[in-house]
Length: 148
Image (cartoon, rainbow, N blue to C red):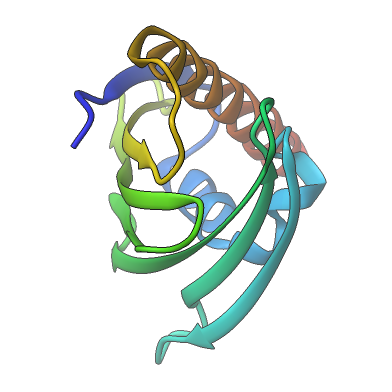
């Protein structure tokens, strides 16, 4: 398994809002750069995505993978990829921590290993870019929802 990437960001929105935005997996193509489509295959008892197929712009090629989600509302969302043609292994999570001023610290961790050859330095660079872009998209969406 790859080493992985972890980044955090402070967001001017409450934990509950961030959790709800991140748990709305089907809406990712609206705000998550590079996510071309999401099809929710199964939902949990709370109506949240349990299994979903993603098609993303992997820069080198279009990548398709299926994620299985777990929730610890409203503080953590985690996922594991089912092995497939493009992704051999992938795990990730969002963790949401309320700060004293009412904002939230979001910690995003991602580890991925593709099923196709890609040099390690490039894989790490792509991983960092994915995490940074996802955090900025989540922040923008959650702050817009929070202001509405």
